[in-house]
Amino acid sequence: MIYLDNAATGGRKPDAVLSAVRSAIVVSANPGRSGHKLSLALATQVLNCRKELSNFFSGYGYERVVFTKNCTEALNLALLGTLEEGDHVVVTCLEHNSVLRPLHHLNKTRGVSYSVCPLTNGEIDPEKLLSLITARTRAVVVTAASNVTGVLCPLREIGNKLPENVLFFCDGAQGAGHFPISMQDYKIDVLTLAGHKGLMGIQGSGALLFSPRVQPKPVLFGGTGTTSHLLEMPDFYPDCLEAGTLSYPAVISLLEGVRFLKGNMPKLASEVFNHTKALCSAMETLPDYICYSKPNPCGIVAFRHRTLPSEWVATELSEQYGIALRGGLHCAPLAHQALGSEEYGLLRASFSHFNTPAERNALFTALKSIARRYKG
Image 1: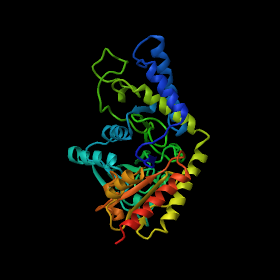
Image 2: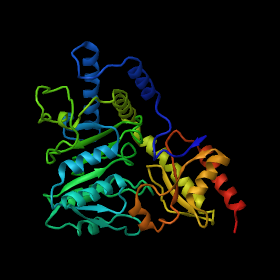
Image 3: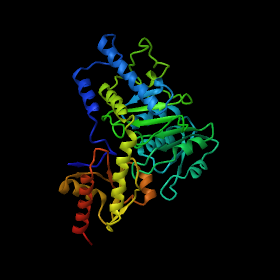
Image 4: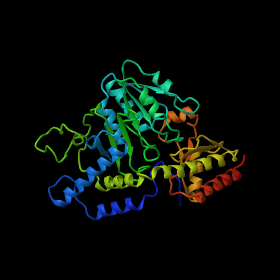
């Protein structure tokens, strides 16, 4: 099958990632939970991953890197652990449900309110977003890139124009690994990561990075391997936010994924950008389809057939042509409302550097064939 659903999860991984994960499964131990040599060796690798992530994203030290099973968990730790009664938050209409649902929950339980910045010509206008900040605004939450269209948000411009007292949260699920994100240069206080997408890790890998301006309170409670004589969670990071056994295979995959990206990211981003550029250009020759994306380094091209439901077309591509992509609504309801695609959703082809021009052309040929067969 031709895999073009990399925005959901990366279909292929670098050889170094696969080798590291195999080794982690063959020789298994609990990192940092025992005093024997194997446990200590694995704990050292976990520490190495924290350091690599902090360096890669210009973070604030390895102790402020918390491992999670995905970006959703990282966002929940950050939002539920930081926002308090009566706080106000500004978000964009491009946000994923991993931001919107926690905020909805906080609105119901803590009275946290939020304002939504709309699109301006298909993009987020920093000035319009900043105009929504009030005296009660505690944080601004912005996705690095839309998981629906692939459009990038102006992180540097937003971060450097925020008032000093407002925290800057960035959902890096779709952007991380595809283009540089510097926490310190962009004044990002919270960065959440999905390891299994652009960062080349496996499913079950994710991370939360945060600055000294943020002090998230524990949301999960359990064993940490430290201060075990106390019933309270440890009062230091990262331990107080990491209850239970870490998935060492996931952590080691993230470590090798970041190592693979170092030095290679510009080349990989260029290859992915070229895939989106070629497909966006080709879509202009198919009058039965409407394209919603511009060329982007995240590999995302969103489009729809003018009359056929997107989920139906996605099923047809899978069953008849052996092509995997996503159709329907993409866990971002406000984005679909802004794009006017909430009724039938969108088709989303998402590329990685592992994809080939031949695979991209196969998608184009299949779309043309479907349009021809169901004309009128």
